Length: 151
Image (cartoon, rainbow, N blue to C red; front, side, top):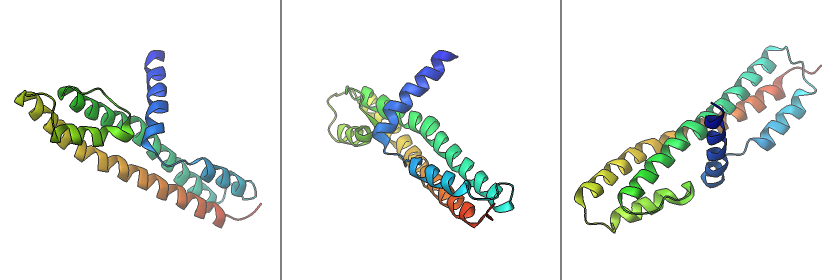
């Protein structure tokens, strides 16, 4: 189990560097500063906390589940075409280019890579939508905590 956690942590460190996911650090800092002067048991503050937790959960899901799935699909497609795997920021474009001009002549491998690319085209927008939802949830959390009554 510890090996799995270490693998996920390492993958996240590598993957998030290339994925350019939204950085919630400044938003969380702003939230905490606002929350320090608010009545945290108020309806607005509780709703704000829920929105913030949802945003972080959505981002975690996107980063862990979707990002690793996208990396796996992209790298599998590159391997089918005789290419080396790459970082996420360039994998999609490399796979697309490799499909346009494959280095191999094996029609079965090219067909498999095309299937993988089709699946990737389905997964990638889901990841991007999760990230967008997470950003919106964080914005909502900030609005709600601003509206919470002061102590």
